[in-house]
Length: 271
Length: 271
Image 1: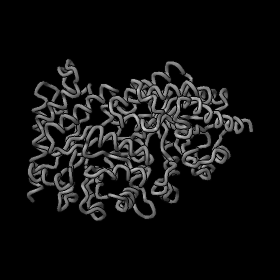
Image 2: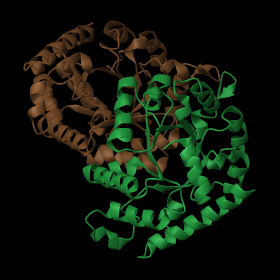
Image 3: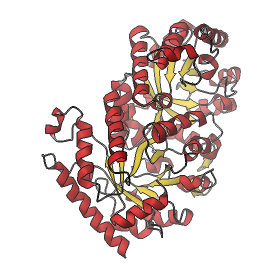
Image 4: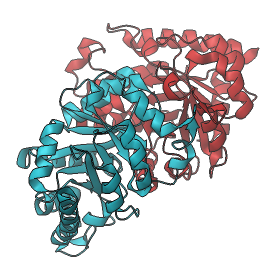
């Protein structure tokens, strides 16, 4: 999917919501545990109930890998289901990968070819040649960590490097990488005041924004400083939506939470 | 395995060699492609031929993920084979993971519990709360990227942060994290002159050193500046050993390459 197609979907659905599929077997409704593949059954129900309210889904690979081969199968079934049934949905493997060149190529193949995701998240620490192998894939998107939503973001990301915060150096430096048009960035919602600064460096790049909801981020502030002429935002909510209820109506309850966010987003798009 | 047990194995085998199992189906001997699980067959042959010459194996997860569920199965069979047949071997999942706290816990479970590796590599960009969930596992080891062996290391890692290079800040900061005694660090062999500086910050921590061989690093320089009183080095070689030959004697040829490195290491241990 191209960024233009993503923008088109956002305007059509009046939503720039991404739903995080971080599925923990301890947190899903108990009746699903009897199913052959509880994680996929959960995802399928959530997706069927919410696909019209969001433009993207983002399974976090950790939650699948923790269950080994079974988990990897659930991940594969989830992405295949999305690609088959809802091809207009933007799919993100939240994997935060990154390694030397030939190894990054293998990761890129894993997520762009074998699993056919539209996008994958990567870490910037190893620099240019660890990210460019991902960028080489046409119409695929590489979402690099810039400023994350956790406490540890202040350990290194906000420290000054040659006069500028590390996350700003990451943004600046990455603009010169080959196929940098395929870059998007992770910027945490808990640091909304940083968005204005970030938009000076990357005025129109799409930002994947975690931290709204469970982590305390404020949607209004993020939109105020982060929305660009081509929208340029994907707001992620995981736990706040998918774990809205543990009873058998969990998918409907999740849809209600997604609808609330979609309606707020619609307002920000109209303004 | 504890670090004391690892040191004991190194002294017993007179080797601090780690063999990287980065298995690419395009590079292994063609006759193996007929096997049911070519990657595992390759790994098993390499392990059986080299286990007495090294103290650690390091499968890079990218090379398994690229083959989807099949690849994950090969990885599982490889770690199970190592744990069953060679329990004195130190096993490293080269995964370079890192995410917010609850997600890092899931990654730690994936590699320390589900797959039962002794160690996993992680990226430092997201800071303390992205790494501490790994450190919480007793007798397991978290190997954090400090200074990597690739060109992109100069993009951010060697840039000055508040007067000191970022990789030094990473080393310094991480010493204060909970259970930091379970930390080891990745330091690339291609930057041997940095080892003296690094040893001032972490005098005895184990360093996993990629880049000897195919990437051009020099073993003598690494040992000169990097060896500590408890040895503190694991030198990794991947392609230089496992792809020594493509014929049916590939495992013996790999063992010859491993023996060369082991003999050099034995000399450095005696000095």
